[in-house]
Image 1 (cartoon, rainbow, N blue to C red):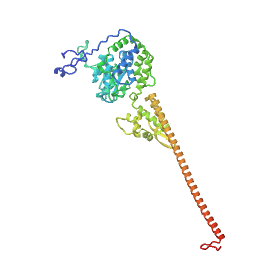
Image 2: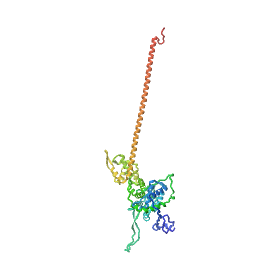
Image 3: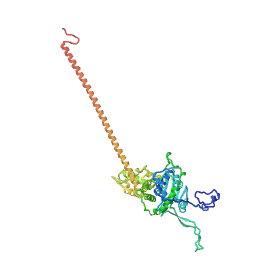
Image 4: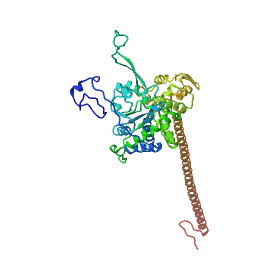
Length: 490
């Protein structure tokens, strides 16, 4: 291959020519991204059947939950018509460790989506330039190796899901003169606006950053069991599905553009924006897909990544107020209640700060919750008011999460009540058993006493009878004139 010619195929790589490799990025020939040309299907496409086909294709090659499969099927179709809506959906694929199928899922989505551009590493400058120039569905793998420490890239990704705000500004070099001013010095820079707006997939080991997860369909991957079998990725033939997607998009772009805005209940506004373009596709597909995707969205958005970072902490504080059955809570009692709670560990994982009255006050101050002087009974001290906590809950925690926590507390309370009742019943049974034992012992003791009395009485009777017999014998002998040692004459 001649390295002096432009690379027109993303699959091609530069040769090992040393002179070419020594060139700076500005001196090397640019890569031109050319996507595969897809011929639309000949016949009109039934969207519900297309979505079913995509869902099944994903399930054939990857083990994942039913809710995620449905959301991803709608997302694939969304990549062909995303320009017709105000928001674009991201997909965040995360796994606890390697060999959980995240790269396989990313490859399946790349095979099905429109204009896929896959990368396992990308610089910040290449990120927005690739989007602006190539208009791709961008699929980023191995993001755990560079995304966490690159705040600039996270910022660009965060802004890229809404059409109105998906832009970054840069100064691009230009060498040009104004025709009317021959003596003017060449301009050294010019302000350029780049678009960051396109569908994206981010795959990584570990947890996706909170701000990205908040804009994404979060798919949690797990290592499949030996008993779970998948079709090899090499056998995936996406041609038919892609042709149908192209045909459907060409026929229905105006319908997608003019469809009413859909707001999902029981999820936060960001999650509703993420799923809104997918819900449009589901509603066009029919009531079954609309219901299934709505239920899937609620379950996927219930994932802990989709809530603000302090949500679990605020829920634990709510639980502390409920468990104490009070509208005022001393700081020391709140600190005791939070020690060992997952909410505090999640929120304060970076500083590892011990739970104390001061650390709680510092943390809650940003949510306008401040300690004050409170009175509980006759005691006065620093503490918190329920109405302040309630205000933060309403702003930063979804109602579904509050309801889930209250249900959990009720269940725990019911279990505690049942345990207490069972303990009371056990005590009652033990008391009855002890009473029976005592009564039995008393009965036995009474029987033994009665028997002893009978024996004594019998003994007394026997002794009395023996005395009477002796007296009778004596009288009889006297009557016969018999004395001891003598015998009466006849």
